[in-house]
Amino acid sequence: MREVFATAADWLTERRPCALATLVATRGGAPVPIGTTVAVDSNVQIAGSMGTGCNESEIVEAALLTLRDGVTRTLEIDLGGDDDPLSAGNGCGSVLEIAVWRPQPPDLEMLRKIVAGKNDSALSIDYERAGERKHFEQSIPSKAPIVLIGGTSLAAEIAAFAARLDFRTIVVDPRPAYATRARLHVDDIILEWPDECLPQLLTECSPVIALSHDPKLDVPALRCALNSPAPYIGLLGSRKSQANRRDRLRGEGFSNEALERIHGPVGLDIGGVTLAETALSIIAEIVANSHARSGNALSNLICAIH
Image (cartoon, rainbow, N blue to C red; front, side, top):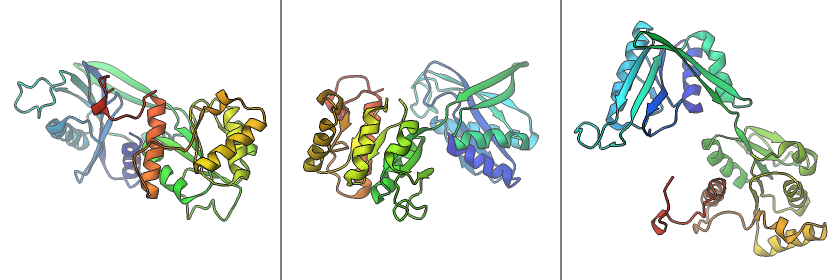
């Protein structure tokens, strides 16, 4: 969602007329969450999707009308059932209520705050439905941080995946030669030792992964993580180095039960060998862990998919 608002903010900054279509209510299920937004500019460039298949064209047409006349309007899309030959097989039996509105220059600050994700923000829209004035406001939480220990090439790959999952990507590494903007496309780089910054940084929403292969970084990072409510603690390295790190932490007084919080070797077994494949396996394990899932193939399970 932030990517769509980033595009809309760019268009407003360029003084390019655009309209936004925001999902404000549903009856029944929906293919996307409340607040999902599609942006359309005067050149009919489209950013985002409601996941409604062929009904997307209806959303775009409504956006183009609002773009021309500036009138905020509502649009109802009935995803219907399989009996509708034009429904493209959506068949989820839901009705989407969409507010179509034209952002104005004063809205730019709101959009930029949502995009930055550094603090909680709100999406606020005034619209009319059947002659009745309505107000939609959605609270948008700040991005959860994911903390990567070590300014490595793998950290850069993990950050690329994590950014798509709405994480604020942070690399901690006291070595200026490794932790540079040229090497790492992340939100924040902290040039400090892990034990200097992690106690203030780690929360119940911030996964942390030790990637450095250097015990001078890994061990204090793991120590801080184990003393924090971090929901996921990952450790890169061979089984020999895994055992070494655990032995050192055990010698500091950490119990075997505490050490079980460490996911190491980090990642799911997908057979990956490249940096991108390794990063994918790590991110997949973080997602599975956040939903208390095993990471097994869905075809081997009988539980609900979502």
